[in-house]
Length: 525
Ligand SMILES: Cc1cc2nc3c(=O)[nH]c(=O)nc-3n(C[C@H](O)[C@H](O)[C@H](O)COP(=O)(O)OP(=O)(O)OC[C@H]3O[C@@H](n4cnc5c(N)ncnc54)[C@H](O)[C@@H]3O)c2cc1C
Ligand code: FES
Image 1 (spheres, rainbow, N blue to C red):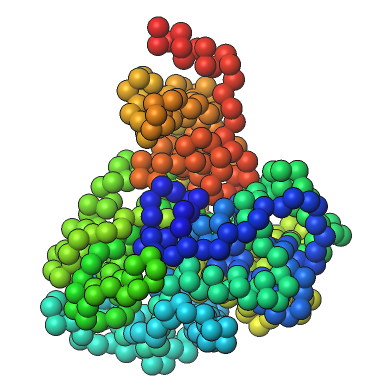
Image 2 (cartoon, protein in one colour):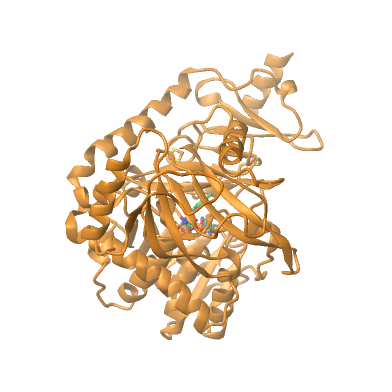
């Protein structure tokens, strides 16, 4: 499968084709329109179509072409921000609902896969949180107590992960977690949505989303979808200008997947404690036709950093492989290397519910963090009820309009970081000379508002776009690994030619004005 969210290929994309759908060729009227066909959008659409609602799903790429094709798909209630942190902000009851909702999400994926006969490699495994960096056994004990208070009473502190080849030291053991193949799962959801009368259109970019009775989505081809309810599941909401984007920050994270002999590493979920942390799982290897191969893939992720703020993205893969080889000596050849984007909410939980502000018929799901597969499933469960005019017992905890004063230090830290990015207006570009840009590479050239994002394609042709992000006007940076222009402020990303890949931007980088182009040519002469 070819994803539209970057240049690299994940192990899921490398082994699975997703079904193709037609683009929109006319205006439509529907009860619910879901924008974004990742885990959140497809789960929401599936549940609403099951409930008999008329559902239309649109996506500007293929289904699953966003972060859901780049995930590592640990399905877990071992939340990466720790229960003691969640409890300190959301209280004991909030932590309890967080645990309950994530455990229910794992169960819901299992039950949907079973009911719909989706062959998606769902497997129940144990999860282990082990020490790394400065943390000590006391930190594990603190989390153990918090998980028990949150209702995960079977979490245990064990002396080590049951590996014969490496002593991890003490670890927290979380029973009844799971793994899944994300694209096989989405394929099954798509089949069920169509069966239940839903319609899916791909290659359809939402360019304007407006509330109303009905609400409207204007697509870049000019067709308009009118819907009683609009559910925006674009990973980060493309309909919101600032409120949500000041409450979450975009991070890049890196993954490698390599061969290990079958049975050499017990199937499970493994995470260490530093920030950023490493995350590990296994997957049976198979060829493109789905035939099992005689080895497994060890999938290891980590090395997160703020989007658009890394000096050298390739270095992240080098460090990741080194970390892995030190602990998993059975790792043979690394076959896949990819990266993806994660939205980190300042108070640790996803934002799911009515869009903040005055909108009455627009719903959002975002703030996935490293638990976006379960958060996306929780979004489907909650939004299915809210869109149908009912209440849900988890809705208050995940309400996008919530304000948590105790999250203020994190809020300030992330927003000071954003403010600092505007310094790029006063520095020179990444490159002075267009001629120095190699095929397949890009660089920002120039100064101030005249900064230009210049990409040289594989055939040597030069493509120029304004380097100013259309969201809130920060300067984009070139991402060598994914061949995208990444905005360091709120994580918008654009393909080498300037088309938008990730929100919050909803449109691409502007064409360059002729006078700027002339300026550059003159400068070169
Ligand atoms: C490397 C990596 C590892 C991860 N590991 C885990 C893990 O182990 N466990 C876990 O729980 N979570 C994990 N996550 C997080 C999780 O994968 C994501 O949070 C989740 O897949 C996001 O799903 P989504 O539906 O919100 O967004 P996406 O899957 O990104 O879907 C959004 C869709 O919206 C579409 N779209 C965007 N803008 C528009 C527009 N204007 N018009 C039309 N369509 C649009 C996109 O094309 C895309 O298909 C990981 C993420 C990454 C990147
Ligand atoms: S994403 Fe907000 S300014 Fe670019």
